Image 1: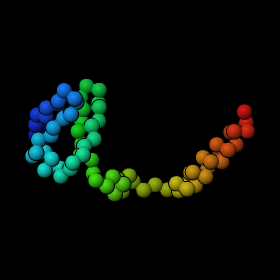
Image 2: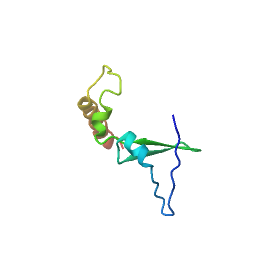
Image 3: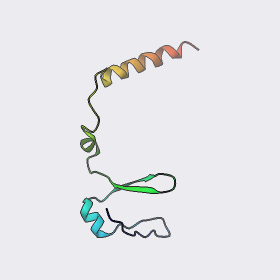
Length: 81
């Protein structure tokens, strides 16, 4: 792991060195504020595809079943007031 210096302009823009941009092959980054430091990570061009398979498969109800349950709960709570 290496470190490089990046300058921040008076308007808050940060320039990443060309070597870093080439290594990660990205034109966009995500900055995560961790309180006393930040993490700069490359942002994939296609975020959904990059996330596909990143979580373990779990049994349970489908997204559509979850939405139906939420709609039903929301609908019944409107008349409970």
